Length: 244
Image 1 (cartoon, rainbow, N blue to C red):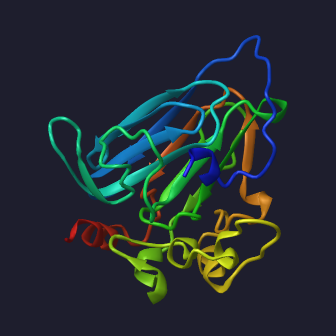
Image 2 (image 1 turned 180 degrees about the horizontal axis):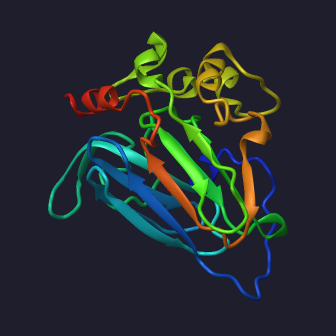
């Protein structure tokens, strides 16, 4: 599938002409008690990945106009010296430095920069399921509203959606119009309501409430934190994500 087809952003993107535009800095921090392999890919081009021990950070400078972009955590990975290997969750074709979106289940920080009226659009998405608690927040300027998804979703996951190291979204499991919204109108389901009740600010299905998307002025810097302070189940997630 094309990267564009996987993006759950459904608001229109407008091409803008920039006279002055600077890269946005994204600080990605692993606050989990276990190692994760952070990944970043944009539909408009570019990608990468980095091993993050507990407490480590990865700073990314993201170009103005970047769209269809995702940041996520991969768990229980093994890579060789050439950067080839495999991850239990979030794997992106067996590469350390991702060039494609990751495999579900994975919690997603999604964004598009300098779009309509030179605004950045961002949200946390559970459209590809959940593997690691996450915070996505601005760190500069007057923009203050951030998003968190820190619920105990892996342990509470409905049996039908259970996956090694995470909790699948129903579209991944059932692949039907009801859950995937391939065309036309569709509404929430019992499974999307399960995610929404635990992470009310997150996107939980492809036609979810647009209020789940936050905007900030172009040029804002951001942080993405895996296992932010307040996540009640970090040790549990650690043990589940590391077991074979």
